[in-house]
Image (cartoon, rainbow, N blue to C red; front, top):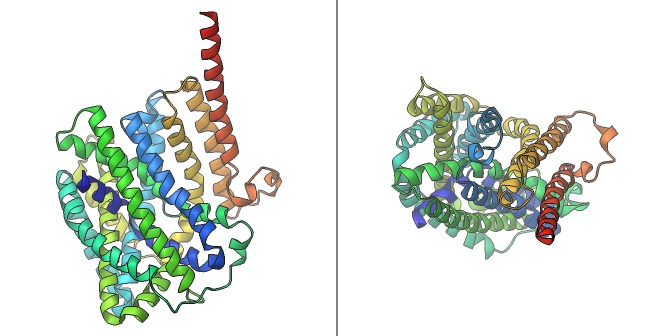
Length: 425
């Protein structure tokens, strides 16, 4: 049980989880508490709900969309897997691991980055090629080592002194909680939770756990363990950014390296390199495994092993872009896909309630898709000022009220219908 929980935590704790909280904490300054709470809502709460939804549905997107034509589930799955796999999230793991763990020691950054990313994805691919042993290799070996290093870093941050709180950035001053919610998007964990849930159920089957109730129980406990671990890491990193910010830092990685170097010197940088490498490697293994497992299920010619190699090679190529470029590329795609994923999670959690019919699922997905496309166009620089009248549009959350309204309407209609039937009887 703990091995599964540790493995789940390690899969989630990757690049975005480490680089975004320190930067957000620094920019939030004195407003760090509401920003951090908003961040925890989307970066911990949504992934937790995502795993709960997979447990309730008995599987990932194919199970969640089983009332619809199969191609719809395939389309959503492929889009999300490409985003969290070879296009953005998986390559980012190697890029962040290099910039935080190796670059401070390198005199030839271009060559060393290529070499490091090559070795990184070779190791990730080798670990991914044996999915039946993932829980043993990640959950029982790599993650305990990672947790020991993270606890050391977290305790040092929470009890450190001598830092300085920087002024609140204008972007965080107007609506700090909402800004934290949006920053939590960038971890991609709400998307990943559905895919990791599918992978975990598959691993449980390989371990001989085939009973639906047992699978759900394991998955729920693993979700709680992972959420608790993520919350601890985020709180520590937010406090680090708020109290030890670096003026002009391009990302949270620079803040983290600066803090560790000042507090612990060269030994600290070596330990940090270990933390970052383990965190990013375990996430890369999870992403490669989940993506390859799904794509192999769609192909009759290529096996799981073939897709592991193909994905690893593509990730290696993407990993040699600049970190800022990769992050900039990810934001429009993320805000477009997130509403669809969250809507699917919320529907799956309430699917057993009266009124949650096939029609409800179709309308929920249509509404979330429409607003997701609009949010993506706006994030990419498109001019959508004509829609500024929509509630929360200026904060990138115009989809929230429509999606919640649709779900609430069907839930209410189901309750009213049940009461009417009861009265007639």
